[in-house]
Image (cartoon, rainbow, N blue to C red):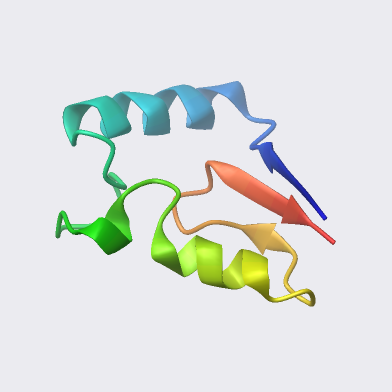
Length: 65
């Protein structure tokens, strides 16, 4: 398993800027809870699944099998 940043630098820069504005919470989510703190619970749960390969919700991270 390997987790990397999106290869599209523009996406990474935009998401990082959004994270700064929302104090580390996913900029794609309206609520600011512990579950939306980057790396969000949704992606952590996906990472735990050995069969999952793909991007997190906001497309900042990519998990390879």
